[in-house]
Length: 185
View 1 (tube, rainbow, N blue to C red):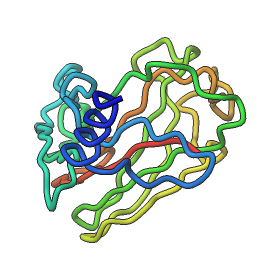
View 2: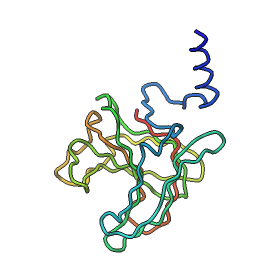
View 3: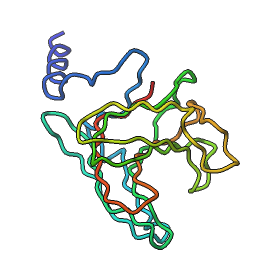
């Protein structure tokens, strides 16, 4: 029994309380424990583009987050930087959207979802959102995601989701975005 109480104390006081979430939410990331093992940075350089950037995982006021920065360039058929995480498990079929806690440099960013049906590298589902310098919650219903091509379903199915990405995309700009939580509702 003492061991269990010590473990509870350790988890709560060292790692902090669990991030807040509303009923029905499934929070998949709060960037507390080794997020670099789950999140990967990609740029259009893999396809000949010239965009550059990086991701770090700092902590501020006791709250961990991902910090993606870079320069997005449409030169040489480029135009994106992103951080992506493979989803470990299928989501319940009643899941209706993506929930983020974000802030940034007053720009528009995107979430890209890949499913079991997005087999080609250029296939994804995309929804945009705007950020400000203050932390805010963003809710993106699956019905608002647009397929990147006609061969894909019109709306992604939650149980077929394979990865989620935060993306700076489509225009020449300086990117800077912080992501504190990633979840589904």
